[in-house]
Length: 186
Length: 88
Image (cartoon, rainbow over all chains, first blue to last red; front, side, top):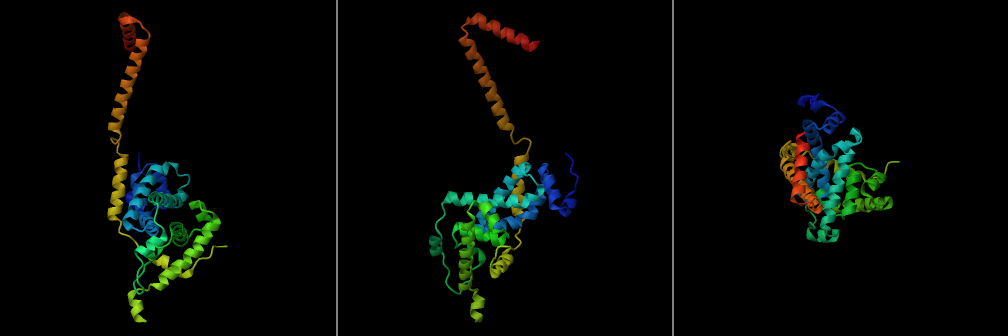
């Protein structure tokens, strides 16, 4: 097989072209896609997981699964959403296998004291699993409620209430625990 | 109409998407993929399944011959016939 694009040209090429080459079995093209998408994919899974190492392991699994499944990809333009769906499925499968502890138990396990910095990932980790999933897909991925419903198989009404209650809870958590410097500055 | 989202949370999410160092992660993914794509990757499995298939075919043939109750002479005749066909 001959590769029509050099490595340098690949880095300049539109994603659709790189995806098309990767579908044809071009490992260099897929490596380019990994380079382009890794930050986004790992950040998405870090928002969903409570553990960055686990997030990276899942991201690696998703990319390997993507390499295997690329021939089945119907449209090169759908690569991003296809990858995102695989990430959501990987995380849900993992979470279900662990039968995650309830949000209340987790909150009791590491509730910070007021004045302590509470970053977004930590605040997200205090939400219940499905609530966190809906919040991340809405705020991090910019997906509509209907798209989230389709991606997660949750009813639309449930998605709406998860986002409404999750947003309120997240705001409360983030507002209650200000970074130490901001707290002293008051 | 676009679903309404909290503006402050939108800002916080946008700020939290930091670039992550990718060298090790990228190398790990591509090493796994290269291992999967190696032409020799399936060789041990191929040899094992070929030997297994040949062995099972041979056993089926022997059992079929035994059921025919041809006796030793009949079996030898059949084997010779098969050999003659293979050499033809």
